[in-house]
Length: 358
Ligand SMILES: Cc1cc2nc3c(=O)[nH]c(=O)nc-3n(C[C@H](O)[C@H](O)[C@H](O)COP(=O)(O)O)c2cc1C
Image (cartoon, rainbow, N blue to C red; front, side, top):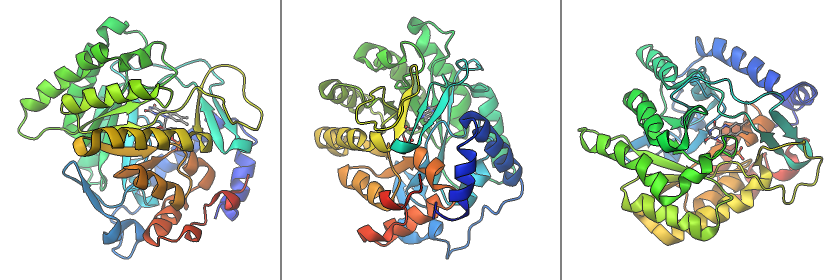
């Protein structure tokens, strides 16, 4: 699959700056979003009834989502549907629009089938994201569930983090199908400290109070870092379960450089892709074993193939997401993976490690 036209396009694209190519792709996908087909035919693998599932009362046409960070500002929602994704998580958005960190800040690690980023939540702000999402909905171009992932603005001091999340929740919850509290990006100083019990409770409680006042509550997820010690991750999971949070997204990128075989770019940044698969899946399995059905799990980190997705499901995930696998696999990635998931034979995925072209 990635050996076809996309294999060639990718080789060319990989010679150019990663963020520039991402921006160019988003411009193209944004234009396509105005005209692409979003009512997929019933014989499309992305609409195979055997792949549909209901999680937190939301019907997902298939269990593969586009992970947060790819379409931060909800620019191309119809395109993701047309490509076969069963849901999309937009964001991370913050209360205040912000430019993110200095460039360069996005790197490819082709020898490791990985990416490294220190983008630092570049986004147009929660209000702009909500407006765009609402406009897509009004135009009847949203056909899959949309999650909105929220983070803390860089200018907001840690002690005011809860207000920041509450503001963003207030403006996005009505247009989202689910909302994610992201306290796990390594690229905003101090953000991951918000995974500690007191800080996390201070963020989650006002959102749950808002939920309690509504006739229809908005499912709430917390996204975790893979670098938490096991006992700390378990403490977060138990706190979330006790607070009535719906689920966990496991996991964000890692600050670990362990196991990388190719050249590593200088500086800080989170690693995504294949090197993350083992730890993020082990963490998912650990937390599922601890909290059982008290929380729903979305598995993310290193999903490149149907086999990878199956491993996440076996570890306890109800849904999976991918970012880096899509970058390496290209436009055919969602349907290739879904076809493999639908036909549960290990050899059925054309995106197995050996077939991904470096
Ligand atoms: C360039 C880039 C930007 C990302 N931005 C965000 C983000 O804004 N918010 C977030 O929660 N996760 C973000 N992520 C993390 C992904 O959503 C995902 O958790 C992680 O990349 C692991 O999945 P993968 O191995 O399929 O890429 C980003 C990842 C990458 C590679």
